[in-house]
Image (cartoon, rainbow, N blue to C red; front, side):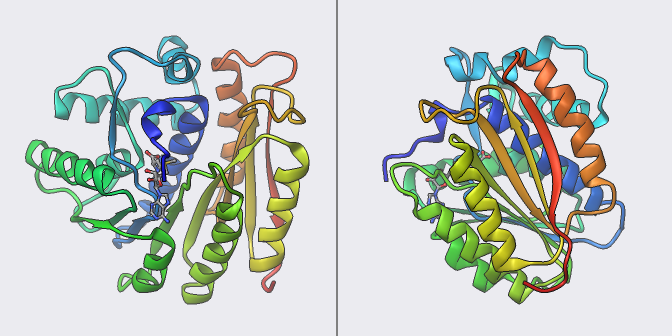
Length: 287
Ligand SMILES: C[S@@+](CC[C@H](N)C(=O)[O-])C[C@H]1O[C@@H](n2cnc3c(N)ncnc32)[C@H](O)[C@@H]1O
């Protein structure tokens, strides 16, 4: 596997998925009882943006200078600033594991799975640095392995509350579409009330629609699709948009997502071909 998330860290899709991730964590934290955060494709946890890539310049760098209203967008920037301050690195971009650890409480628990040895090693180092800087947070276990396989071992969680976050690369192969669909179904079979969130790329409209429909058919239940796009959705050239499928979305997540996604598109400088949507693609209780 050649995928390196460092080439993409802080791009508009990262911003989109990380705002959503923190909004889901905040929603679960409305209750005191702890929960499991399972990150099946964790990456290395932090990325150096001292020399920003073009992707980061068109993503997180735009957001910093924008005046934002949605609490979800401000919470995201606040957590990112917290990780940067704790690790003493003002130009770092925090990935899903560190943003989550910044938001999780001592009664919560994180399992962070990464397949590539080098990335998993770096993640372990970052998590230790975080713990040293901010003691007393949620316990976190870093595992090198296959995130899809670890779904089976980790679910249902002993807390009986959980958020599973699936963020695979979808590079070079379409396999991740199949694996995410099967992973979704497996996660919900084992733990029907858990919140599951998976990212997917929006490149071609046809592929994105077929993927959403196939997950809805496989899992049923309450399934929300939140999408944001900056470019025409029918060109194969690059990443045109960013999508998230969320099973068992907590109360008001869909309504709030519609609001903050629209603001995010504006903050990212989206033009005539940009847009966003937050739609329940399935409401039924059985697949
Ligand atoms: C898009 S990146 C993840 C970024 C991370 N979630 C974040 O938000 O910072 C995808 C990661 O998944 C890893 N990966 C690919 N296949 C995997 C698998 N089957 N199990 C676990 N990790 C995998 C890749 O090595 C890569 O680091």
